[in-house]
Length: 249
Image (cartoon, rainbow, N blue to C red; front, top):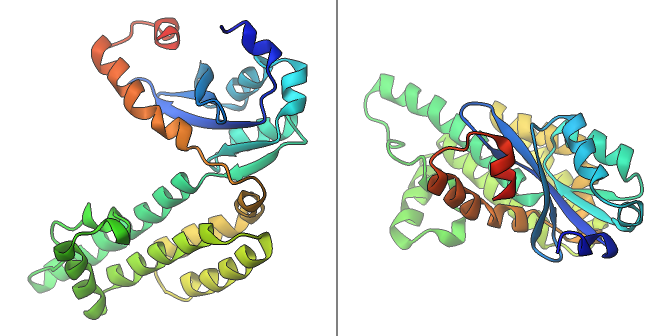
């Protein structure tokens, strides 16, 4: 089955990282988005590791790659540009949602500490709640978020900025996507919320990769979907003594 892959063109692929051991121990995974399968996995997430992933494809397959979904990890971007220069880099919406969620949590933690010094904090126990998208909140949870916003808390504003960015993915053309981003960017930069401003600046730096979504509309959903399977494999094995066994599984 693996040998037969060499005869198949691969148009849209995903690059992602997964934890392998403890701490900052990662592997890099190349996936075929259209066929929902893992193509290869290698240790580390360096340029050299990513180069090796690309080299597992045939010259014909490399020439057939049209787009690559990935995070904004520099090693992934540099290696992709060098090995498949004609392919378009598409920054993945799942990772961007993660960045925005982490920024909201940083705002929450800082504000929570300030409010605790003054007495009681209404932000206690809301960490997970604020990571949810608006449509996934039940009535009670939505009321809690609404209360935070009506109280004019920084966390409420940060959550609103995060939620608003999800409209970016609903546009159909690069032009409209760019117009929306410019408005959203101005809002985030004027928010006086440093974590949100930092993410906004990062997204603006990689705006071309964001706008490429409107031409190719790919995400790393395939790779993200493998997470539960990979975790099951790791749990069943308890621990892998070497990477070769992990790769085979």
